[in-house]
Image (spheres, rainbow, N blue to C red):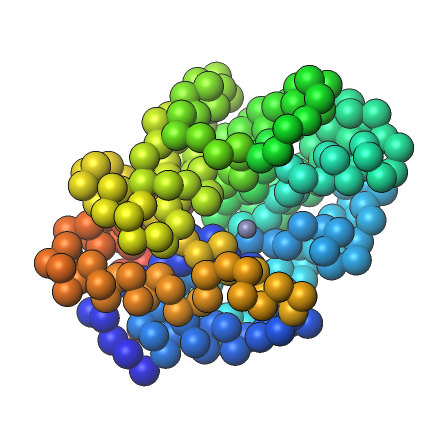
Amino acid sequence: MRELGTPVLDDHLHLDRNGARGIDAVRDFARSGGTHLLVVNKPSWHLGFEAETGADFRAVFEETLDIVADATDELRGRAWPVLGVHPGLVSRLVDERGFAPEEAADLMCAGLDVAAEYAAAGEPVALKSGRPHYEVSDDVWNASNRVLRHALKRAAETGVALQLHTETTEDLTDVGAWAEDAGLPPERVVKHYASGTLAGVTKSVMCEKDYLETAVESGEPFLMETDYVDDPDRPGAVMGPKTVPRRVNWLLEAGRDEAVRRAHVETPEAVYGIDTEATLA
Ligand SMILES: [Zn+2]
């Protein structure tokens, strides 16, 4: 069991009991010095759910809450859930199930309402929404932005943060302005899968060394993530669960203690209201 002398948070990954690694991924993370996780529910259809109503998302969320409890048992710190609706669902509904874009948006908003119920009841520290990262029609783009703005509103009402999956960009000032409109401080909105540079909202930086160097040098708040997906069909498709602890070690060896504190203590507190030091055994 490695000890890095600091909390080490992976800000965005997925766990799957029926995946290739299941809870072993958490053991690998912990053995490498990782202490805290934000576990995001997998896209509903990956788990074999074809939602017809908002309530149908409950099964997906319950599964995430269960595995978060198991993950916490393996950590010196703990795991927290992030619940929401993957923005790619809009295309599945429109292209494969014959929904009109606005009908698809209604269903996705209903799913977010259920996620917000869970968040209001306690455990989740963020909702998850966004918009497609690939080319879509104007109708689908507009419907997706309506869903995103609904998520901003629900997060604001519930008092939690919002993680976003979006197009590749270093400028989300449009979303930052919508967050203000919704009453959610833009710094509580997180773009997952970010590079080292981002305007408008907080960046959750993929653990590429050059991205991290840019984020560190920026002096701005940032988080670190792998977007690990425990997918038996794509075992090497993403960064493994040991990556965040390894990169933290790399930063510490380079004397970047301040940046490590920024990414693993200060930014998590400012964005999610979580205390990664007090929750460390
Ligand atoms: Zn993800």
